[in-house]
Image (cartoon, rainbow, N blue to C red):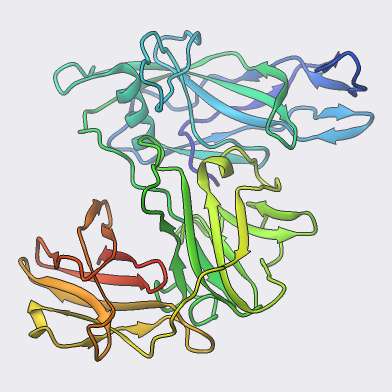
Length: 410
């Protein structure tokens, strides 16, 4: 299941009508048979839903009679839209300077098929806070929330045609106040025969490697979406991307004959034509526009044109070890390695850098950026010492090409 919304809905089709989708009178656009309407059953949850104490609510539906193009089924893309008023006149846009008059928002992830989805109630609460502008003293004790489903057909450029909406249904929700802050950047993980030890296992560093934010790029404050990357050596054994290491492969990117495909468990591994250094880039905002089993251009895998030193070893060094070397472990041992990891317990006030083992010719310092799992940084050569603020154990991940450093609190 995908995480989207909590409640139970059933979508059924009420017949078909024949409509012609025309962008230009000179185009020979196909005539598409489509449902006229979705019927949403009343939400099955009894009583009020506490958005803080609950985690998800399940939304289930049955596929309507499919859109049909000359007897070929066409898969629609569905979006859940949410309003605290029951009006849908202006959508909230997290990137807009002025959201005055906005009265609904769309949940970020779209879907195409399946038995059901789950919506994270904390994310739902956050979106309501942003839309309504509630403060700690004005957040209501009870709020009616209205939902409807948007259904469209998308072409390869994500243009939308044959739009229909469901009726509205209502949920009684108990919202709560939290201090809003920018969402963590959305990070995907590399896994497979080309990645780390090549075992397809789940251990961070040893088996899987996170993609990285890019210095100077911006990321959506609400969703954390934007462009992320990884630069490293691909030996030709294949790999995939996972959106979470805890969702049983629900979010993934693989490859088929037509390119990279999203959330298709039957897709093949992503492969390269020749072993070498590659830049793997993923635009998670563009990826969110693609439905399940749809091919996407959000992912690119291109040869790296820069140069990269192959180091014999990396280490952490600092006040905690008398500025000596505590060596890191290479993620890959069967081929050229550029990713390193170590788990270490620090005390508050410790200072640390990452450096080439046995030498200070290559070293990285800088300033941490805080995020929910710990800290990350864009390492600067001969930069300032990193400062540890509390007693904690961290898994440290480092890429010696990009200089990206990630501290994950254990």
